[in-house]
Image 1 (tube, rainbow, N blue to C red):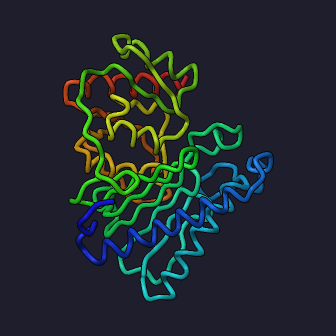
Image 2: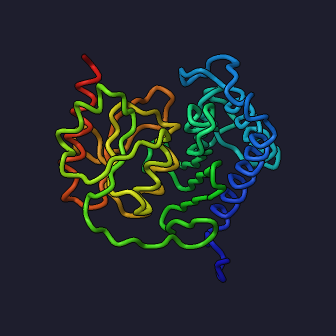
Length: 282
């Protein structure tokens, strides 16, 4: 474990503790659900997607921890995929939660799904100061603190050398959208599609994958935590027009974007994103 305290700011450290406890509680809630019941539909969330048992139970566990934090004196507003928005006497702090990113994978017994929690001191992505992803297939925890880097399972992230756009990832990868994107990625050696936008973003940020093209608009709950991880790793996140992505932290936002590890790859990934979006409209 790291020998010096991290993060160094007591307020940041308090929030890292809270989101870690929330992820622990949600992980335990998920583990308690029989695998064949995880995909049972129980309604529709405020984000617009069908709510599954796994979504409901993970969110309830996270909210329970946040309720205790509020009872202990913290004030914030919550934005969460299933219940939408809820005020805890907010003073400008926002907590953005996707209880399960990659629900379809979880429903089918695939391992790529995660808990995503972000804490922001303002209304936009660039204001996010704490981020946590808990990979529920592997147990890996990725935490970012604005200005203080990224840690994986408590240890500083491993720097990975960039050797080219060799292994790219696409999300929103319907056959039609893929057909529109592929002409712009023909030079890429391999393509992956994980089915979890948050994990795809984090893997590019950590250098496990080399670039991401999002072919279908994502939601703010999907990306709020992973966007800070990307920023702290120094990768490039741009919208479908190639401008820096700084989306508002609202339930209404929808957007497609690309992530590149080096500037030389931005144009190709943006073109792939735009090609996929255009193909999806027809």
